[in-house]
Amino acid sequence: ITDKRALIPRPESEMLVELVVGAHGNAPTPGKGVSPYAPTIWDVGTGSGAIAIAIAKNLPTSHVFATDISSSALALAKKNAKRLKAKNISFLKADLLSPSLLPLFARIREGGLIITANLPYLPATDKTKMDADVVKYEPSSALFAGKDGLKIIEQFLRQLASSRLPFSNLFLEYDPPQTKKLRALAKSLLTKMKIQIHKDLAGRNRVIEISS
Image 1 (cartoon, rainbow, N blue to C red):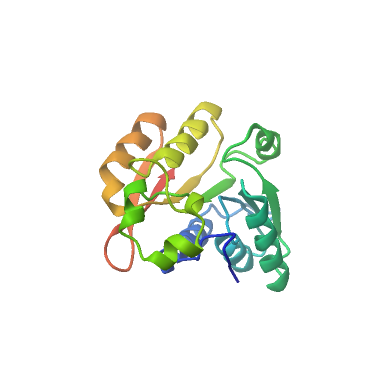
Image 2 (image 1 turned 135 degrees about the vertical axis):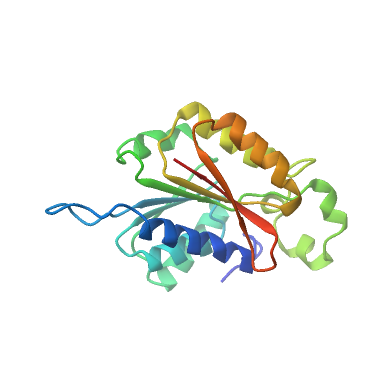
């Protein structure tokens, strides 16, 4: 369920779940006597918890951390997780890569972290073009992010670069017209990582994957 506390999940965001499950399936097979690979997933800006909960249900051996800056959104996400009996998930209040999260992720083995992010990415000017019901019933802070829509995404990528947080994959949803600028930004900040663009069902660029 969702309400005014969080963004209404879109079909495009299902891609994030599918990509994470696929990335887990491509992980190296443990050797003899080694415990099965149990990835740690971090869903940044979880909102209603839809993405984090779906991943938790699809990967029951994983542990999912779901973070959001909004206490009310986290309350909604916790309610959804309880209703759907997703037990391998933890909810934490944090502003993107808050320093408080670093000790938590420091315990994860190298390359054992997969990140999903459906952060606000619409340009502020889009507010006048959107359906009135969307603007009225969904929180603006979950939709719009500055003049070009990349304000919060850029902040997060800069945090990842400066912290050198070891992750295997980052799957980040964005607005198709941002492809060229976002790709250049990712290349300039995370210079040693691979970049791939995934298209949605309508054939539009929708998710950027940054991987080690």
